[in-house]
Length: 172
Image (cartoon, rainbow, N blue to C red; front, top):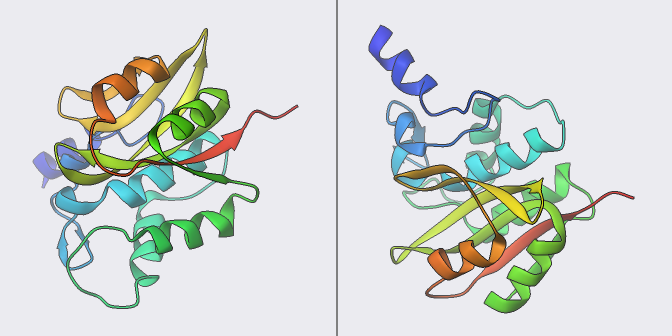
């Protein structure tokens, strides 16, 4: 039991963002082990955390799971992501296409990308950290908590399939 708690704690950054979905293997999401398909609710949790909203990660996981029409194995559906974010983040913008998504994200304070990572549908969250740099969470192994420019992220990760950015604008 102590080992499980340690493993779960390793999934979080020092400042409380979820950075590694592999540490959620003891939990279920959509009838599967959550380490296999939890990128959607993790991205939503991280974005809400950045915005200062109090939300327990397990509440986000459960609420998003309940929003799926069928309780079958699979990833977070885009319909569920839109519905969930619209409940908690008014004014979030959705942009389609690689170049348009990168441009919108580069101007935003934070957001979520939906794209294919290693040919698997994936959601990741990011936050602006100044000087043209962004912090990306739960991207891949070895890049669980990475800082890079938006251009670098696009060059290294937005390589295949449809790209969607869900962005939160800078305030003021």
